[in-house]
Image 1 (cartoon, protein in one colour):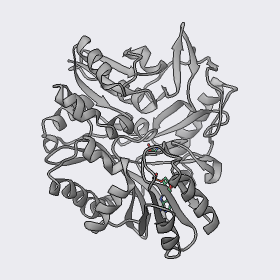
Image 2 (image 1 turned 120 degrees about the horizontal axis):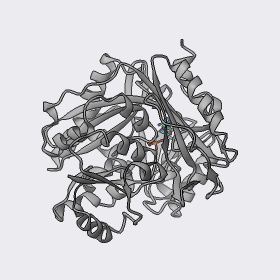
Image 3 (image 1 turned 90 degrees about the vertical axis):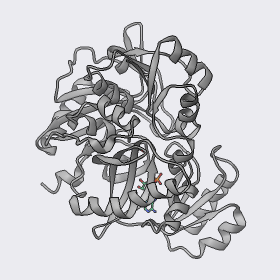
Image 4 (image 1 turned 180 degrees about the vertical axis):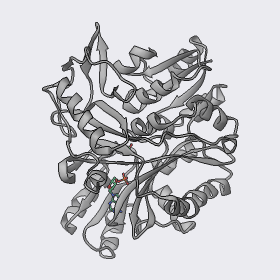
Length: 421
Ligand code: AMP
Ligand code: GLY
C-alpha cells in the first residue's frame, strides 16, 4: 500500500524512518517533508491545508492511507474531508481535535467530568477578565483559547502583565480565537503520557519529558521543545493508573456522550504534584521532539499499530518496547524562538547514521544536493543507550562535529534524570 505522511518537522522524519521498517508499505510520500525524509521517501511539495489539491495528489499517487503529523490540519478537519473522499486517515476528526484546538472546550470537559486540572475561568472579554482576575493568586497563567503555535501561554507575575497579555488576545493576536483562559499556576514536575486510541479502546504509547524553555536552567521564553527523553521515570505504574482512570477514561467518555469518538495519537500533558496527575493540556498528535525519543524504543511495527487502530482493534495489540533509554537534543537556528535567519547551509554529509546515534531532520530542505535550514528547530540529534548521562555526552560530541555556526542548543537536556544519577 502507498501511504502519505502529512507534515515537515522532526516528528514526521521520525515517523517516516520508523514506517520504513514495515514490510507492508509500498511507497511513503511525505507532504511536504524535509531534507531527512527526502533521503528515505518521496516528498510532495504541496500545501496540505489546500485539502482539494491534497486529495488530487493522493489520488494521482494511488495513496490509500494518510497519517497526520501536526495539529493544524486536524483542527481544520482534514480527517473529516479525506474520509468523505474514501481515504483512510489516522488522526482525530474535527470535533475530537478541539481537545487541542480549544482550551475552553478541553477545560469544560474537565469541569463536567471532574478531571483534575488547574482551576480556571474562561473570559470572553475585558469585562469578564476584570471580574475574574481577583479570584486568582499570582503568578497566574493567561492562555489564548485557540491554536497559537506554542506562543499562547504566559505565566504572569503581576496583574498588570496579565491585563496586557489578555488585551492582546482579545484584540485578535491569535487568529484562531479571541477568548482567554485564566488559570491557576500549578507547581510540580511536568511529564507527558502518550496513547494510541481508536473507537473502542486505547493503548499506552510511551512516556517522555521535554524542555520547553529556550535556555539552560529552564530560562527564557517557551519554544516547541529544545530536547526530550524517554521514558519519563516519574510515570510509574501507580501514576499511570491514576492518569488512565482520572483523566483518559473520562475524556474519552465525554466524547462518547456526544456520540463522537477519538482516533489517533493522543498526547496527555501533565503536571505531577505529590504523586497526583493534573491535566495541563491535550495534544491531538505525537509530541515534537517527544516522538523522536519514543519511536526508537518501539519494537512493534508502527504500521501494524496504525492499521489496527483504523480497524478499531487496538485492544488486541500488546506493544513491545526496548528497555533502553533515548534522548534528543534539538539544534536550533540562532535567534529562535524570536527572529532567526533561514536558508543557511548545513554540511553534515560525512556523518553516517548509526542504529543508536542518528540525525533526524526538522527545519531543513534539500536543494541541489545541499541541506539548507528552513526553520527554528533544524536538526534533532537522537541517541539510544542504557544511561542518560552517556547518551547526552554522545549527542553533544556529534553536535560538535556538525559544528554549524548558525546554530545553538541546550547542553543540559535531561538534567532531571542526570542529576539524580
Ligand atoms: P500549554 O500550551 O497549555 O501546554 O502550556 C505550555 C506550557 O506552559 C506548559 O508546558 C507548562 O510548562 C506551562 N503551563 C501551562 N499551564 C500551566 C499551569 N496551569 N501551571 C503551571 N504551568 C503551566
Ligand atoms: N513538545 C511539545 C509539543 O509537541 O507540543
